[in-house]
Length: 437
Image (cartoon, rainbow, N blue to C red; front, side, top):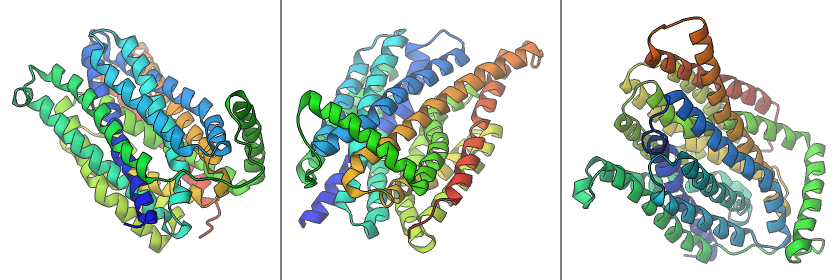
C-alpha cells in the first residue's frame, strides 16, 4: 500500500470509528434509554422537548467554537492533533454514560452534550483533511468511501449491540438495561481503538505559507480570531461560497434532525422500540453500498444535481413520515433514508472542498461545520417547539378530548412535517450555486 492509499484508508477509517457513536448512541439507544430510564415518569412530549433542547445546546457549543478551532488548527499545522484529541474526549464521555443512574436526566444530557462536542469537534478537523488526502477529481469517491465505511462499521457494532439488548442472557447480561449500558462502553472502545489507524496513517499537513504563524497558547488563539475575521470577509466576497453555505445550512438542518429525532418520533406515534431499532439497522446496511453509488452517480450528473436529487427524496420522506400509520411504512422510510443519507452528506462535503482555498481548509470547514451545527440547533428545537405549540392548540380547541395518547401523536406529526420547508428552501438556494465542474 503506497503512502497516498494508506492516507486515504486511514482517513476513511475514522468514519468507521466514530460512526459507532452516531448510530448506537445518537440515533439508537440514547433517545430510547433517555425516555425509558433517565427521563421516565413524565409526559412523552416533555421528554421529547428535553431531548430536543439537549441536542440544541450541544450543537450551539460546537457552532460557536468551530471557526476558531479551525483557524487554530490551520495556523499551527495541527489538524490531526485536534482530530484525535476531540475524538478521545467524545469516546471518554460516551463511556461515562454507563455510570449514570435512573432518573438522572440532567446528568445524562450534560454528559451527552460533552460527547457530542467531542464527536462534532473532531469532524471539523476530519473534514478539513479531505483536500490533503484526495486530489480534486477523486474527492466525491473518497468522501463517499468515508461515509460508506461509517455505515458499515457503525452498523456492525450496532447489530452486536441490538443482539445484546434482544438476548442479554446470551451475552452473560442480566437484562436489557445492562445491555444498553454495556453498549455505551463498547462504542467508546470501538471509537478509541480504530482512531489509532487515523493517527498512524494520515500525515499531518504542513503549510509552508510564511504568513501563517504557529505560535503557542494565547498568541495562537488571538491569531485564530484574526484569521476568522479574515475568512468571514473572504466568504462575503464570494457569492458562490455564501450561497452554498446558506443552502447547506437549510437542507442539512432537515437531514440532521431526522437522524437525531427519528427514533424519538417513532416512539411518540406509538411504534415499539424494537421496530425502530430494526429500522435503524436497515438504514445502516442500505447506506453502505448506496453512498458509494451516489458518488458514482455524481460522475454522470454532476455533484450539485445529485445533491438536489437527494433533497427531493428527503422532502418526500418528510411528507410520508408525517402521515405514516404502520410499522411497515417505517421500514420503507428506513430504506429510503439509507439510500440518500450518506450520499447527501458525502457529496456536500466534497462539493464544498472544491469551492474553498486548500490552505485555509480548517477555517472554511470550521464555518461549514458551524452552519451544520446551527442547523442542528434549529431543527431539534423546531420540532420541540412545534410539538409543544401543537399540543396547546389541540387541547385549546378540544380536539381529541379525553384521548391524551392521540394528542401526543398528532402533535409529533406536526413537528416532523415542519421540516419540509427547510428542504425546499435549501434546494432553491442550491440551484443558484455555480457548479465548477
